[in-house]
Image (cartoon, rainbow, N blue to C red; front, side):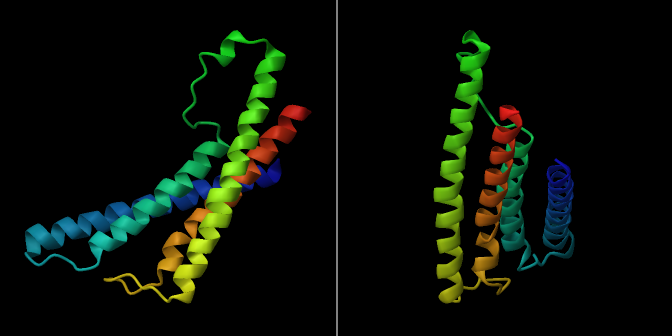
Length: 154
């Protein structure tokens, strides 16, 4: 579980840094638009990409902390053993989704945008870097859910 604590800490700090960069970026955008009168050309695009990263990495972080949205009215009516089985089933479904959509699908998206050499309009960075957060978050979610299943089996 030391690895999980380290991943949590690194991911938490990464989210703090990304969010701080996003706030500074938007403040710069507002300053250049309303004070200087000439809006910065890259800030809108950078804010969008940072929002993508903070949203998708934040979902992985929330998944690892078991803070994701869940409807738990019905499961509370079951016995503890049934609740445990249902919890494992839900975690397996989350793993399957993260594998199929985020890791496989996200990796294909990254590969295609990298091969096609698609660049962002204002920043001129490869869009593959923007989309790379999808398979990274998928791997984190799979790790967290497998870790949760192993922890509940003990």
